[in-house]
Length: 126
Image (cartoon, rainbow, N blue to C red; front, side, top):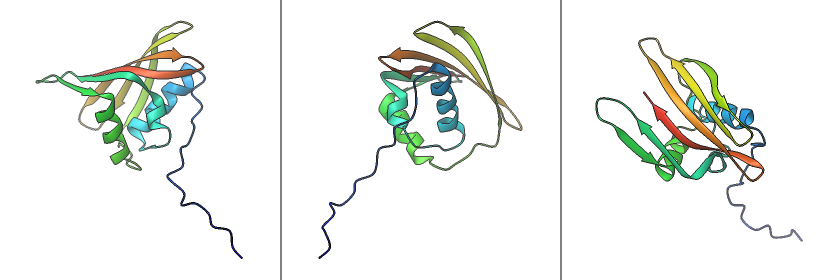
């Protein structure tokens, strides 16, 4: 007689965010390569994103997570460069530059240590 298995819910994947570098690397994978594992884990509860363009836009954590999940598997056709601007034991600011064929997008990313993990707390795009 076969044992009844409970219907499996979507498995939560835990991503290693134990260092700022791991968190930044995962952020780049999520935003440019369509990686969807650990998206909720990556962003701090008070995360927000600002997009500086002709009209300034602001997005909450839930809106960004929802948008990134929809982009699962979609890779951006760009080259990516990351530069650490400031770093301390509990804080990092990095510049992520995405070079597309016709334009360049700059993303200033702030990461903070929360307990044993690093989280993205702010993103400003231009």
